[in-house]
Length: 88
Image 1: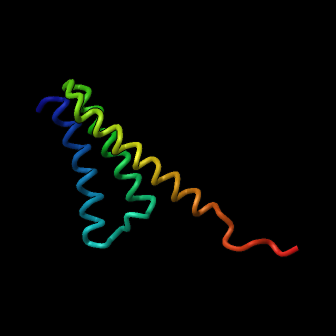
Image 2: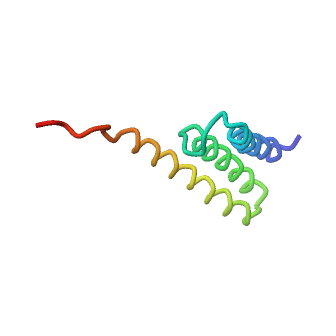
Image 3: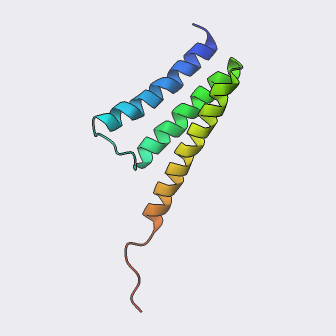
């Protein structure tokens, strides 16, 4: 098996894992793990697209990965917010 095919397959499998886990309601789209799996899978798939020099998928996977990163940051910041205001 070619290196780029192996790398691309791993990336796509991670993306499919996120999709299947969400489809069966094991994880929510608003969860950190969902965003992380999308970030990781798209990043790996992007690398594979670079290896085969297929620019349309490089662009797609960069955007997909950035959206996953944004979801991780948003989830992290939401959990970092205090649940109630301090009483003075």
